[in-house]
Image (cartoon, rainbow, N blue to C red):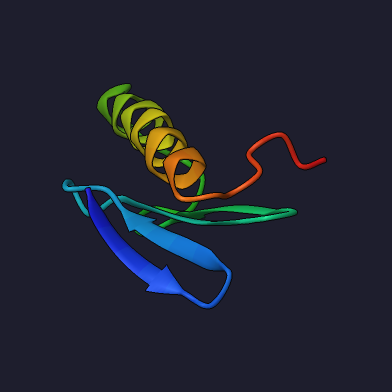
Length: 69
């Protein structure tokens, strides 16, 4: 996962290149990078699931309120 710091948030890019996340306090955007929201295989969803888990760990360790409260 590539982590790109932004003011008050982080951008996360999956190693596979098929997903990006923008995560900050009160913000969580999932940005597919290929094929829109339609995929031909479950591996794309596996990539998204791993990215979300890894991003959550990093974001919370860096002061982001993951719960949105």
